[in-house]
Amino acid sequence: MALLLSPLGVLIIAAIRLLIVSDYNMSTALAILSSNGYVNTLLGTVFPVIPALLPYLALVLLYLNRVIASCLAFFATLLVSPAAMSKAGARTTALHEWHLVVGGSSGRHALLLLLAIPTGALVLATLAGFGFTVVVRTIGTIAIIIVLPLMVQLYRVPLNEGFYTNLLRQPWLPAEAITLTTHKTVVAYQLDSDGFWLEVLMDQGRSVEYYRMSQISTRDICQIASISTGHPLLPLVSESAAPEPCYPPAAPSKPSIPGGVPVQMRNNLVGK
Amino acid sequence: MGIRVVRSTTIPHAVYRYLLPHEGSIVVLRLHWARLIPSLTMAVGGLFAATAVQPAEGRNNALILAVWLLAAVLIAQLGIVVESWWNRYLVITQQRIMVVNGGFLGSGVRLSLPLSQVQDVRLVRLSGGRLYGYGSLVFDSANVVLRYVPYPEQVYLEIAGLLFKDPDLGE
Image (tube, rainbow over all chains, first blue to last red; front, side, top):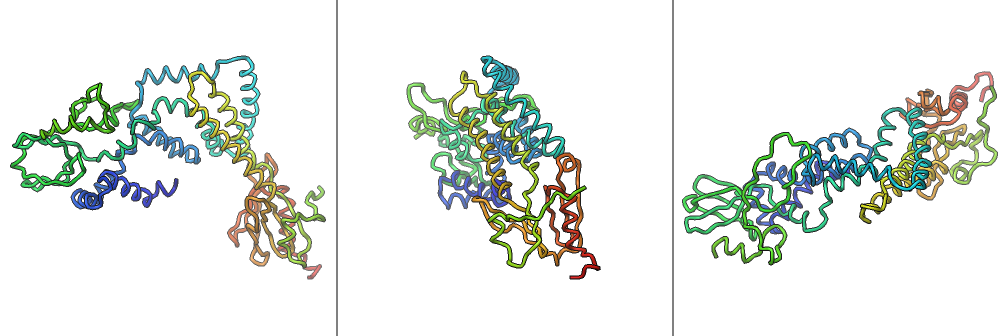
């Protein structure tokens, strides 16, 4: 864990993500790196992943007795991590969790009481003998188990539907629907521009292409996949309208592919 | 007040194999049990927390498994700490101070501090130590701190007696 959070760990994560974004093509990866700059690439590869992983990072830090770091991570989670429900929904879920904990048969209550008494006594013994810091760490570790069910509902573990695949493959640059003078529309990410040439990373195929600026008629920011459409529990700014999707929504009868729409529909869109 | 630390007549095997034939006047102690309290609290608290959040209705199996797995890790952690405490000895001989591990999770001499390198020893007893009856021995010259030393005053006197011998007795 320490290695992952160290500068070397961050560098390794950035390198891995850059390769995934480049479809494991080293030339493309190097082109992105040289066009985008080392610092931009490093920050860009790491930052977009943080909101999705922050809730679970906070839990791990708490487990590792890094209480202050964990509190900061929880606070950041409230501000930036996309939640699966609204604030009112979270309150209802927390209440429901509480009812689940205190509800049940009398036998369960007796068992809970049987465990609560020594737990309370031991917490007091820890407080008396080892001080505030140790007791906070101890309670923090226990609290992970209590908080986990609520966290899983608030920040759903996205283990299916290729969530992480989409998240890792999605470049950190804004996607653009670039319409050429030939009326062909391509979805790409701008890597560099010198006023005459536009260097882009194509969304399809992840190759690096160059277009003359004079060839381009319009450019619009668009949204590729619904990776972080949720809003944090405590948004600091009012919700703004999301950009238009880069590809039209998939037809319900046709199975969609992760991260986009059926290939045929994409081909229609780019005018092939 | 009588000294409660007695010189060992039966030396644990884990310690005996690291002693030299001429090392005499041996005190062998386990570290204080108070060091188990935080791990014990976490294990019992983990069990309590897992029982509290476990209601079958409205929970998926993976979540229940994760919760119990976390509790099991805390219990296993307690097991490791107990095993380590049970098999770790503080050994004081006329030549050196040792901390010896004898458990199956790791055995060997964790610390061997020759008395010739020790110029002074300090006894530190914070409120927790006074409550439970342990203390910390600080060897500034060797940059070593021994925590959770039971019978701290007596052990301190034993070590101080070895460091500062009565000049009238001679060698």
